[in-house]
Amino acid sequence: MRVIVCEDERIYQKSIHDKIDLWILKTHHADVSVTLFSSSEDLLESWQKGLAADIMFLDILFHDEMNGVEVAKKIRETDNAIPIIFITNSDIFVKAGYVVRAFRYLNKPVCYEDIAVCLDVAYKQCTLRHNEYLIISDAGQRLALRYGEILFFEVQSPYVLLYMQSKKEPIKIRYRFLDLIPKLPEELFTLCHRSYLVNIVHVRAVRRNMLTLSTGQELPVSRSFAEHLNNAFDSYYQEGGMEYGMDNL
Image (cartoon, rainbow, N blue to C red):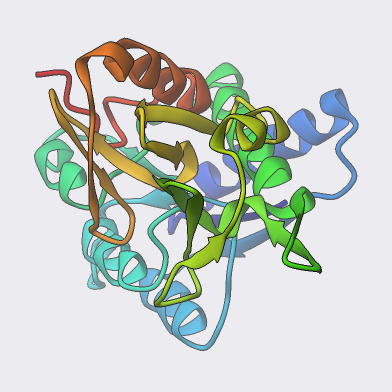
């Protein structure tokens, strides 16, 4: 898992880094790397050159530089999924944070428990997204599809349409929907409607009868599946749902 810390005050940057190192030590997750930035503009420049990460701890106020909210807006242009945790001494940017779907706001000085919760969520998400595949056979071919790339499934009997993040057109497979559901991890995939199975990773907002995906697409939410969908959303983000854009209206 790749972690970014962007904080211009040395004392806070070191404190956050030390707590991340402590979490790595306690959890025995050796596959974690940490990249440090003291400048918001250096971070943005590196991001635009191809830097990627699985979680970001981002200060909001920088001296004579772009603030963290503006940086987050730029990052959201290319990455809708990365959890962004704002580090702040002020709550004046909280409303602006909803625009960039901030995962959490942590007040300085940040305690270990808050850092650990964020890292636990990100590590779980990262593992599910990057390390697992759906393998299915259809029309004489076998397909291996990374979970994180799958947006949702739509039933158009006798076919199932599989919508992928990296493809403009859905993959059409002749498969029984009820046989497909047990092949997928319930932590990631849940029914929002009898004809739609959605990947929670890509859900950005849940409303009374509609949800919005990271791509901007909207899917119907039926009354019979609404509670299950909301529970799955909350479970995946582990109480980060409201900060991540959930709407329980």
